[in-house]
Image (cartoon, rainbow, N blue to C red; front, side, top):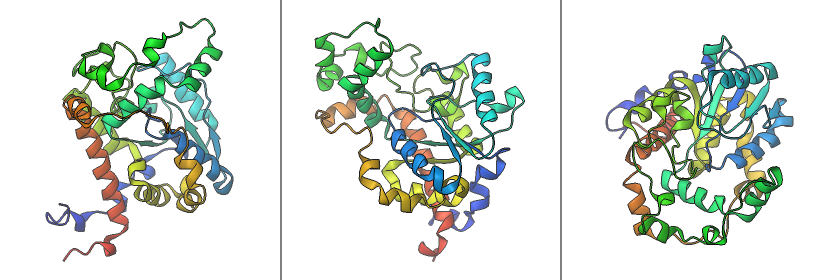
Length: 304
């Protein structure tokens, strides 16, 4: 498409690289849930010594929340700023506008994943014994889920109309937390970002990606993502491809559920119908990623 419309010729790394728009050399990976962010954290950990930066993935957070009041946003922004140049910070959090608090803008990155595969992954992750043991250890007074809940079949959950597996467009409230709004991590803290699969929220998320994010990659396109990260953010990702492939097995298996039950294709199709705009956002991010990649590799893709 880019070749046939003449857009390939006009692609340039300078116009597609927001790294230069950052005010301070702090990397902020405000990671989406269930996109392979644990693998990115491990990769950053491997690169930390090589590239001479400091990685922080603990921070001041009090658990993952969809939106933070301004005071909490400022607390996070100030914490990130105080890490200083040459730091990388990771947290499950929606985009924060540092300018709202008079602070310099960091280098934002993130990852995306097929929207339906994400929510399926979350469904089984929420039922993971290790995850629930960790939650109970942190909060011994938490209510334990029933055995019926742990054994609930996802296919039946969707087909039967169980509220847990109904991803209804424009809803604000979820019957259970499921992180179905991938776009929310990019849209930000505005309440207009909350209605699920809302065209307005999706457009705001696209604008954020276009203006604020240096790179939004995807492990579905591993080589492309690593190449773009290396070239657009070399301060943190120089040598990323070599380091990744040296540690490929451990990185690819990080947090992977190898016993995830089978999900029928007709069930996936039922769900996809409710993720129309989320898919639009997902494809937008991947198209931008490929534009960044193609801008580096004009010679490999002849125009004539």
